[in-house]
Amino acid sequence: MKVIVARDEAQACSFAAHFVVRRIQLKPDLVLGCATGRTMVRLYRDLVVRHRNGDCSFARVTTFNLDEYAGLPEDHPASYHSYMRAQFFDHVDLAPARTHLPDGNASDVVASAEAYEADIRAHGGIDLQLLGIGRNGHVAFNEPGSSLCSRTRVKRLTEDTIRANAPEFGGDDRVPRYVMTMGIGTIQEARFLLLLASGPSKAAAVAAMAEGPVSSRCPASILQMHQHAFVVVDREAAASLREEYDTVEQVLADPYEEYFWEGH
Image (cartoon, rainbow, N blue to C red; front, side, top):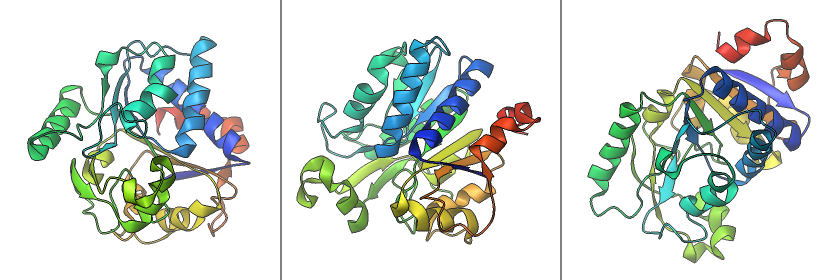
């Protein structure tokens, strides 16, 4: 795991976008794992700008999202299908047929989850997986206590996560209680992981992830075991870290920067 500290959320997202664009330049047919959430809005905005500036094309990129709410219509304003269209898909040259999200409305959830895993394998696996982190240390919707080798499946949300997502639905009682989510084992198979976190509310989770024991109590801590996991956090999210880490400026000025992008 490599932790990189940015001045603020804007710099963290700009650097993360730079990372994504560089990976696409190196592999135009990249399989990109997409995440959602507040911080990702700014990242996708930066990617759209870079696309419009001619820095990269998404025409050959294929995407797989981490998760979707169970029982929520795809056109619901709070669904992740709607989120991805509004924040990213509708603004770049990404063909709809190349985008994939879990089916939260499948009649057979077990078969649907297995099919999602098979589809990822059929595309050669995920090259770069984007990730956020929950205040309780969850990645995707793998809540504390999740198996560290889990696969795509249905999960019940914790009350903490329900409260965190309530503003999107207009109240706790309107938040779906179940989701379809990639498992931790699925996430760990991606060739590169890029986790983005900002704000003081994420500081404890970031510290537990990066410097705590690897444990299902903090599912994101499994990133410590990944060869090419990159964690980009702003100063507020890095406030509880005890060790010293590189800044964005240091990484960009490193004479061995090309090795960084290649994942060495």
